[in-house]
Length: 222
Ligand code: DC
Image (cartoon, rainbow, N blue to C red; front, side, top):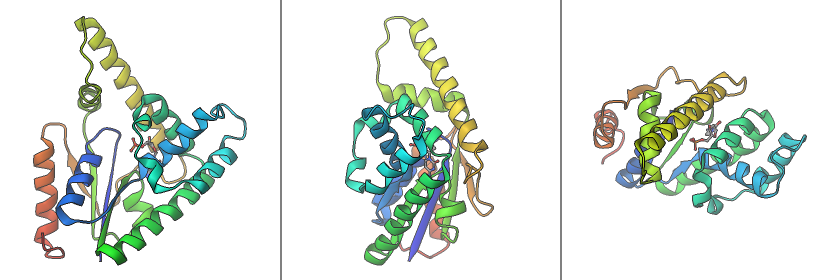
C-alpha cells in the first residue's frame, strides 16, 4: 500500500502536483490545507473569528467537519488563508484534524491501494513512513505571481496590478513565517523528502520529476 506525502509552502504548486499524481495513479487525494481553511471559513461565517475561545470554537467545528464540505470556492480567499494559518498553531485543533487525515489515509489505502495527502506536516507527522515524500517550494515573488494569475483579474492600470502583487507577497511571506515558526508541527521538510524548487520549472516538469522518482522505485506500476 502506497502513501505519498507532499508538503510545501503556500502557492508552491504542491496541490497541483498532488492532483496530477492522484489522477495518474488513481489514489484518492486529500488537500489538508482545505480542512484548516474550512474551519476558518466557518469561524468567519459564525462571526467567531475574533472570539477569545478561538481554540475551543475551532475544535468544535473541526470535530463535525466532513470531507464533502471541502469542495467550496469560498475557501480560496487570502482572508480565509490567513485565519487558517493562525488557528493551525492550536495543538487541540491539529490533533482533531490529524485523526481525520490519518483515517482518510487508512481507509483509502485499504480501498484503493494508496493515498496522497498534501499540506505542511504530512511527511513529518501524518505519514512519517510514507513511501514517497516531496517538499515543494518556490520564491515568494513567483508564488505571488501564480496566485495573481489564478485570480484572473483584468487590471485597468499597471499600478493596480503591481499593488496587488506586492500585497500578495506580504500575505504569503506572513503565512510562511507563521507556518514555519509555530511550535506544533511547523512547516519543515522531512529529512527524507525530495525537495523540488518550482521557481523556474513548469507544472509538467514538476510532475515529470516526481513520477521519475516514483517509478524508479518500482513500487507503483504507472
Ligand atoms: O495549503 P493551504 O495554503 O491551503 O493551507 C492553509 C493553511 O493551513 C496554511 O497556511 C497552514 C495550515 N495548514 C497546516 O498547518 N497544516 C497542514 N497540514 C495543512 C495546512
